[in-house]
Amino acid sequence: MNILRIHRAACLALAGLAALLCSLAWAAPQRTDMPLARMDFGKHRVLAEVPVIPAQRLKGLGGRKSLEAGRGMLFIFYGKAVSMCMRDMNFPLDFIWLNQGKVSQITPEVPPGGDSVTVRSRGEAQMVLEVPAGWAKEHGVHVGQAVSITPLDDKLPPVMTRVLHQEKP
Image (cartoon, rainbow, N blue to C red; front, side):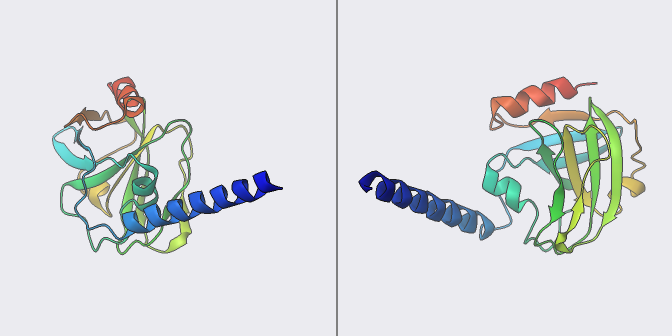
């Protein structure tokens, strides 16, 4: 009985800590200390933030008012692609899905709409790059196009770095 109380109290404490960490990440300013990666689509380049901790991945671009030209956010998957939602988004995005160093799918003009707007890759995808809506079309990005990804610092966890090294065309 005493062990049950301790277990229950520990679970509640962990849940409270998780909620606090998520709320702190959600309230963080637009500028983040996320690792950066340079992504080259031929002659066009995107400087992408890479969310590495769960709170960053959950928040994504949510809460921001816009995304600067030439900027994006790169999500690296540890296994199969997961659904992405437009939680707390204020502007539309293009989703550029990547697999084996190439564009595998493009989901253009995804509108903001909270958890009710979800996007999932139709096939294999090891990563997804979110860029401002219209960027993919404007820059001629197409399925099958090779993409070069270069980490710009050493902040990426080893598991993500391994995926990036597998992505080299």
